[in-house]
Amino acid sequence: MTALLWGIIHTWLVVGFAPFITGLVRLVKARLQGRRGPALVQPYRDLWRLLQKESLMAESASWLAHLAPYLVFVAVWLAATIMPTFTTDMILTPAADLIALVALLGLARFFTALAGLDVGTPFGGLGASREMFIASLGEPAMLMVIFTLSLLAHTTSPANLVIFVLAGNVGLEVSVGLSLAAMLMVAIAENGRIPIDNPATHLELTMVHEAMVLEYSGRHLALMEAAAMTRLLLFMSIIVCVFFPWGIAAAEASLAEVALGLLAWVVKVSILAVVLAVFETLIAKMRVFRIADFLGGALLLALLATIFLYVSKAE
Amino acid sequence: MSLGHFAYSTAHLIGATVLMMGFGLLYQRRMTAVINTYSFQAMALAAAAAWQAYVQNAPHLYATAAIALVFKGMLVPFALNWLVKQLGIHRTVETALGIGPTMIVGVGLVALSIVLVLPVTESATAMTRENLALAMSVVLLGLLMMITRRNAVTQVVGFMALENGLILAAVGAKGMPLVVEISIAFSVLVAMTLFGIFFFRIRERFDTLDLAYLETFRGERQ
Image (cartoon, chains in turn blue, purple):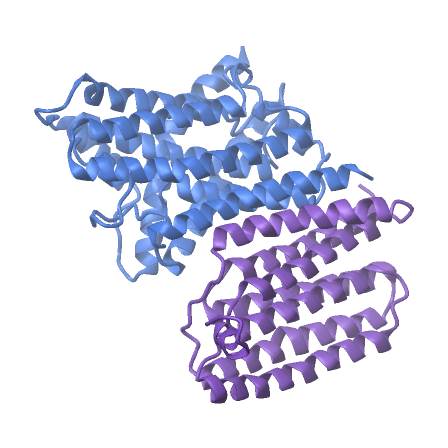
């Protein structure tokens, strides 16, 4: 029964909390750049404003462009419900594993790219082709990280993985360190953060994600934006829950422990958001053709993590 | 978790950091970034030596750590930076082989060193074995760096990285005399000085530090 309750709370929390994290990143970045920055609730206001507005579509848009925002948002939302954030005792967590999570994110990316192509504007096509280019390297890297962790814990289920790490079975393993580095690089690329893509700009030459959703307005745009925010929170959750799971409540935990888990998750994700903002302020955007090197590096790190796993096993 | 396991995994982790910096060297293509990465690698090496000193209870390894930190972590990068400024090549961007292929070859080399080291050292403890595998990877990556770069300064950095790998192997093995390490450290410093002079000579002669021009001079390429 509690699993159902926590599942429902978690499902709404991942969507409800996501704009706050985006707002936090924007605010810290603005402060670091010497601006006052928008209020923390600004992303909520933006989404609300977009939902009120009329949604205009290009004349050349097919049914696909109308459908894509809903599909993208639902796919990302579903992916976000798989990851146990504050307790491992959730009803949806055993339903799918980390590979399904990657597949759902891939589905969302696929429909975003299709929507970008659908209207037939050059920017949409450009953004879609770049997104696929990034995904073709980022996705194998993420899968490789997941394979490494799965080999280590003998499970692909995120809940069991968290339980395995919490039980102290994983020390300071080289493989885990390498996986963390690879995962951070993939997360930066998948969420279109600096140095891969700049989420704050509409400058034609550099944009990837913004180029694909350029044709959307109103509620469609709100859904696309909400999906992007949820994806950012999801990636942060994966990083903090798999690599730093301390505080997550186990099954049959008391209410206080779950509350503690919730608090721990909020604090950890907020810290990561601040770190992301500082990192983005310090680093400059990369040339598009350097992205292959960056993500290739992530893929190789993940590969090395697997290799070292076998070295450690050979004891 | 026992202290033995903790000591082992920490040593392993620091060794992997040194290796990662080796990959960082392959990844960077700007002169100053390469030198800074080398400096980080030397500092990680110092940490590895200090940790081994603590674990093995061998005070002389602290001296090794101090040498790595002061000479390789600070003095050599400082000298190289100065040299690069003097030569006016601190903005040079250079790659002989692309970054991607280089990294792939690098991972292949790591796999190769693991395959080589594991069967040979079957009787050794796990700690020594993995340390050797890591150290050998660092050495091979240093060699790869020397092969794939065209500029004399980055080739020297590759040589220094190779030497870092040697020291990493040395600190992992029990009973390495301090004299050997000091002499290695000083010979590297001497080599560094010689290279510095050599850079100026090459540039005087060919007006460049790009070693591709040497091939024409030797008659290997028309």
